[in-house]
Amino acid sequence: MEASPYLRPLRRASRVAVACVAACLIACGAGAKERRPQTSAPAPAASPAPKSSPPPNAFAKEMIEAHNQARASARPTPKPPLPALQWSAEAAKKAESWAAQCTFEHNPNRAPFGENLAAATPGAWKTQDVVKDWASEAANYDPGRNTCASGKVCGHYTQLVWRDTTHVGCVKRTCTKNSPFGKAFPTWEFWVCNYAPPGNFVGQRPY
Image (cartoon, rainbow, N blue to C red; front, side, top):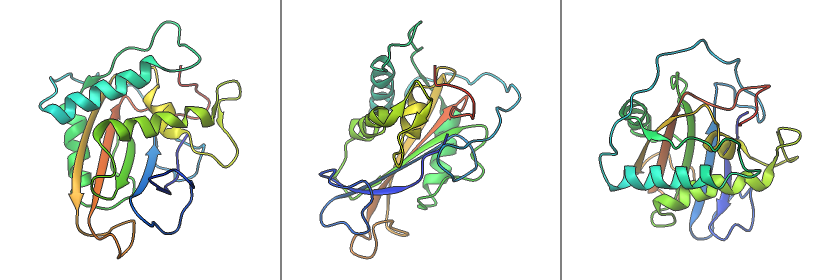
């Protein structure tokens, strides 16, 4: 299950905007290499368990807290509850290397991680806002059919609440090239979160 990039102004007036009047926001989520919504790769063979690391700074702590709040708020209520995510230095390193490219596309070499992306004009989002926006896609997810609503995006949310995902590593970078918002907004902020093990596999439910 994979989310396609979309543009969105800060006031959430539209999920598909070709131009931004003030602050602009974008999100993109993926669990596998395909770019099509609602698709993913077959589940990979088992890989070594991710290693936990203490969150190294305030940003990492905020990301962990926001992710775990989203997991604790999943509806319908998961039984048993979803395990809290731990910080992964390896996932964060992978996210950092990709964010440095300042290219708002999925990392084609992100394996063995899943990935959520977001972008905004400077100051439009705080750390928690990025995760809250991904989590807001819960409204677009039909758990009975295990699909996104027609024409909607929900892959960021399903990765957030994927039961088998145990670790996350994220980075935020301020970019001055390749702006997804066009020449009017040359400076932009780029968030990359990598997840281990990855989620969003065809035929599987988040929990």
